[in-house]
Structures are given as structure tokens and as C-alpha cells.
Length: 240
Image: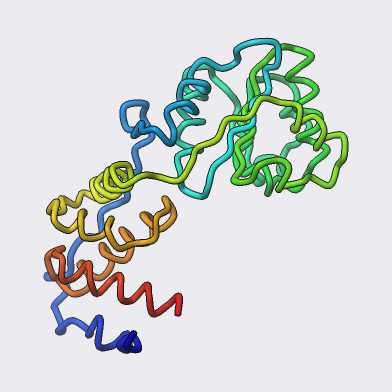
């Protein structure tokens, strides 16, 4: 395989433009409504479980899946339905004690929470009160392995549902949605070209869409298969 071309050849600087010609960078409209969640075989079970949670004797649910797979989107849908408190590493660091006052709760990026004792107490309080708690993490608990043994044992005993890697149809749908979130309408041929050649992950979708948007905006070019080819070549060069 030939060496990748230098970045300057892949994305030559655009000609100078006046201020009036500069494109307006519109804010990202990252929709998180129930109707915006793209259901497919890899996430259908997770959606069914989360939408019906809590169900059964244990109110604690561990939701796992790779980065950018839709865990946060799914958890937000549940939060809006039940009025859950949203717990992130930042929120937990600012006022940890107050989080135990009332639930339900969503702990997002749980493996990054830092305060494992807080998560341990949330699990205990949720079970004692019968209030729902969704623990969203990119790792299975057996891989994550919290250092606090009591927390690890409680999470291992909790029901777990996973979102798997996307198939071709979902990968294409995610690309279309993320382009649409940026107010971009992309020809189907471009989407098909990307899905056939890009890394097969939700995180890669986000990276590809970001690069395509950035370079189309910077160069003033339409989003075409040629531009998509250049973006993938750039990504291949970065990973080489």
C-alpha cells in the first residue's frame, strides 16, 4: 500500500475569502428525543429493557456498550420519562452527598466517576427504596473491575443489558442522523461509500462526520464521494 499523501496535499488551504464570504458555523443540533433513537438489532433489546425500567426485584440496571453507541441517548430518554437525576463525574464531585437524597438516578460514564463509594451508596439506596438506577458504562463490570470490592460484587449481581457494534444499515443511519444534526444533507452515494470503507464503530461515525463537515466548510466544497475519499485517506494516515 502506498504511503499516505501529506495532509497539505489532501486538504490544500482554501483561497482567501472576505469576512462576508465566511460560512456561518451553525450550532450542533444533537437530538436526543425518543423518536431520534435509531433502533436496530444491536440495540433493540437494550431499548426495550431501558424503556420498561425498573422491572422486577432489582431496580439497578447496568447499561454497557462502546463509545458513542447510544447509551447516553437511551439513558436520557429514560430520565425524561421518570424524572431521574443525571449523575456525571463533574456533578458527583460538586455535591456528592445531596445525590443520595432522592432518585431515580442515571450515572453516566460510571467508570470515570472516581468516587466509587458514592456509586456504592447509590446502589444501596436505590435497592432500599426500590427506585431505579441506571449505571451506564463502556465496559462490562468484569472488565471495568471497580477497585471497591463491595461495589464490584453489587454491580456484578445487577441485571445487565448491552448495546453491540452497529451493522451496515445502522452505521449508515447514524451517519445520516449525525449529518442532519449539523444541518447537512448528504447524497446517499456518499453515505454508502463511507459505510463500506470506514471503521465499523459509532465513535468512528462521529469522527468521520466531524472531519467531513470541517473540511467541506473550510474549503467551500460540496460533500461528495471525492471529499469523503480524502477524509478516509486522512484518517488512514493518522492511524498508520
